[in-house]
Length: 500
Ligand code: IMP
Image 1 (tube, protein in one colour):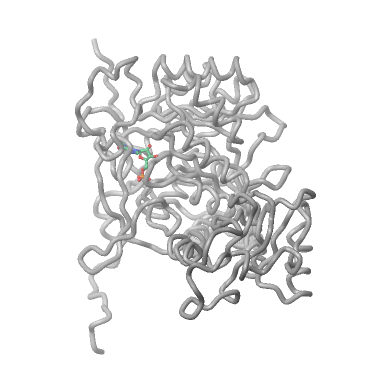
Image 2 (image 1 turned 180 degrees about the horizontal axis):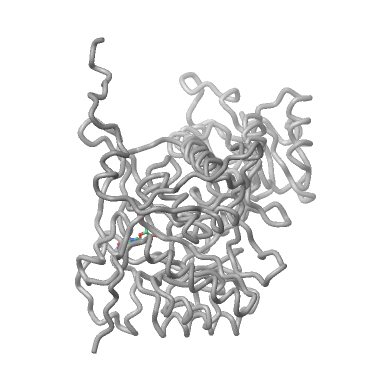
């Protein structure tokens, strides 16, 4: 006979936190949001810790290199989407790893033989007004000069004029040596009143530009998540099919952590993938999922997973529950898997971080998920709304929107996401929708508001760090009527058009 669970499957909106004593130490600026990303033994520290408990979803419409850079600069981490060719995914990973705050690889370059017309075309195409001139026209060729708006007059000069005849040549350019720090580069910029400082190596090859404006922005990121060489951390999604080729390419590109991406991870394919990676690349860190119960958790942990991703069917673009009838309320899933994780820790002394994936519809859901046992959160919709997500910003009915589509939608072409054996068994249905989300501006600005809310809630709960919150939070179920009471009620809310 089938096994029936009498438990009701609940979502975050059905819970609230009950405040605990707020002491004088409980002030938002003292709250520490760091959290383990990968497993560790009792008394040890994990190989990677996040500075904020957030990672961006493994999705085409969410996590590319631009998102990876911005999120890591703000303390979190992106998993670059795996639903693309191995080479392009590896390039995205490499771009995040090559990023050095304030040091920009020149994206617009020409040779001395190009013309003013080429300069104008390149400027129109890239939007950059500073152009590097190198022997071979690449971003890393021998540096021969630089072109800025001050070197030519577009309306008066002959468009056929050669770059070599109007660029500022190498002899007249102030340069910095490869290896100098941003502080040193900035000092040169200020002493010489420069707008840009090209950084060159001992062979005179161009490495970076440092722009005056970037110096200040670097100082604004105290939570930046970087490795011992000051390179940003980045993750990458993988699947259970082409991992023998994809994993080495991603590791070569510098991926710090991998994650097997599947809507249902309780499968023999994930076990095989984990075992292969762990035997061929013992130092590689790999998360697995998604699961929603103890059995799934134990299975993937025993196969070697470094963290476990929890959640089926809760994603905002997800129609898995409607299509396949599988899933579980996200709150119930986290609570049960966290219980299994704690038992495992008691038994073995190994702590397995949990990632709550999908279904965060309100900022307060984040604190609930963290209180219920998640160590960090994976979010798609939240990040898709920002400038840094890879999709287009479009005006819809008078409002700016960003595109956001599921990995299981036909737009993402169900790109090898499903663990169904070799041929995917000709699956013809979708598990996700193609949608819009309201455009919200810069990641950094939105994150500041969200993190402020999380810290404030934690202070109300008497916690200044996440492990304390997880151990001590008092969580209560709410009735349908008290949910109504939770919003503004029995008043007429003023809107901007009202006159008083
Ligand atoms: P969100 O943060 O609620 O938007 O959920 C994002 C999560 O939804 C992702 O991290 C995936 O786990 C999941 N997801 C992404 N695409 C699909 C899909 O097409 N169908 C079902 N779930 C999806």
